[in-house]
Length: 499
Image (cartoon, rainbow, N blue to C red):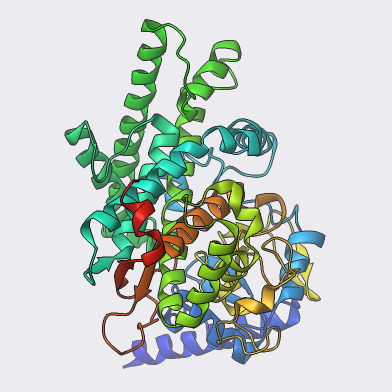
């Protein structure tokens, strides 16, 4: 009995002392109590962005939490986000050292996980100039057009009536084929898949990666990673990913050595291997592997999820579909399929995409940052080593910053240039670690959505509205895959029959 009483008194003394010290040190508001060992993890429910938003609504837009042994700053207002990405941009240019970065990010040396410094600047320059530049994206545009055309053909061939279409699967496979054709010239889903065993291996790696990429409790409670085997699984997955992409690099290297120059567009692996010949120290195999895996991981699910949310909200608002189709008919017509060159001429389509990314951001919490030095946000002192979570979902759905935030109104973005609105809307992040793949994502989302709206009419399955409940995951997936009815538009049947 005495032992239990002493433990209780220790617990009370610890929580009260810790809470008072936070106030004395001018730290941001923090929920009381913070429990020993687990901190505030007992307050967190899924989905994480909604749970953090509820805490911020109660304690304020600058909130300090304790997740196990990690101190976490949660920011949920445009002004605080602006402080983080302008005044304190350098201080927050680092990434926290999470298990995924160690085992899937080549020990924190990739574009996504490298600490701020010369290595990161070199990788960002390489990606901006050689991989994701407007010129490179234009050279590879035929791949994106081909894959969207293949999806349209498949829908037309198999869905001439009111059959149901699983768009979650369709969008996911579309994006993976696009990315793998850009990276290695191969498609692993649908028709014309030549290497079945390699395709199955790739699909397994993709599934395991998206499962493993979720929040890992071992990042906050290290003992959990050891006991639960989470770190061991990540290490094994990292080895499989490395082996897969290395095989592709070796295959390309052999092809280059054994063949004469071909009149075709180079894959991204071939582009980087050609650079490796002149600067082997700057373009190592590990650098090539890390860039390709980053591109594959960051460029597939995010765009697929965005398109799925877009079609979900559109079938709930058929008048918006009609307005978008009228714009497409006016700009593109019915004698050819939409192309990427049409995208700048479709302002209403841009409005739809902006509104989707506002309400249903693929990254509801921006990729975590970490402070490398002490700094001040909103007047509060933020110690070095604090993990930063910017809750973009909360900011972009807050009635203080948006009129009728829960209502889908593409018209609110009419006349708006780009996909940023100060720090109220920044689906691709901001500052020194903003997403370098923004241009590719916007091209692909616009081409995919625009083509499906141009070619087909879309309806809900049944009279009820599509359930817009969110699922659990880093990219805010839908709780249930989107299944809708699809039928060719009468004005497009003649063209589609010839595609």
